[in-house]
Amino acid sequence: MSSEVMLTPKGAATRARIVEAAADLVLARGVGGTSLNDIRAGTGTSKSQLFHYFPGGKSELVGAIAAFQSERVLRAQQPSLGELDSWAAWQGWRDAVLAHYGSQRHWGCPIGALATELIGNDPERAADVARHMDHWRGYLRAGLSRMRDAGLLRADADPDTLALSVFAALHGGLLLTQTMRSLKPLEAALDGALTTLRAAAATG
Image 1 (cartoon, rainbow, N blue to C red):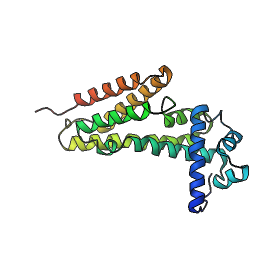
Image 2 (cartoon, rainbow, N blue to C red; image 1 turned 180 degrees about the vertical axis):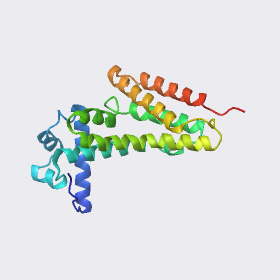
Image 3 (cartoon, rainbow, N blue to C red; image 1 turned 135 degrees about the horizontal axis):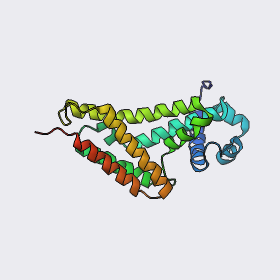
Image 4 (cartoon, rainbow, N blue to C red; image 1 turned 45 degrees about the vertical axis):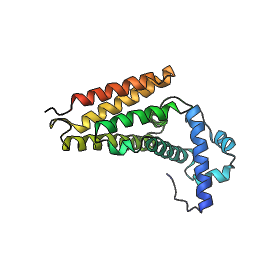
């Protein structure tokens, strides 16, 4: 459990710096491979300082890392992610996703990696990370709902199912991108997902 800490602007900036630096360590080594001592050394903080900002310890810090990574990933997909109500916007989203992951030092999705690792050893925190994933998928579902309402998709098209299909393709592509160390699987997965969406387009 975490405790609310009232922070000055300087304190908030210090906490944000710790989270960002720790996020890079965890992304490179995994949650299990990154100790609090590693984080202290990597962020230049003392034990007391670390627990001042994260009274709940490592689990609370991991939760903050998940929120940070989620915000960073979603921000990289804007404005297209919030405007998925046209085919051009979906193409723009596809391009933004490829540009973001192509610019990262580490392959794969940091949010998905956290969720996968935490499921077995910290189910409560894994559920928090899963909510970030659901929020992300919600953007896709909302855009598809708007497209159906606008008559761009068939009336019988199910935004929930289509959004899940696209999201599954996205994360399958990200997993293969990580194992193959290439953007080609992600590119193929996204192009296939958009082809599936276009198959649900209204005709006439």
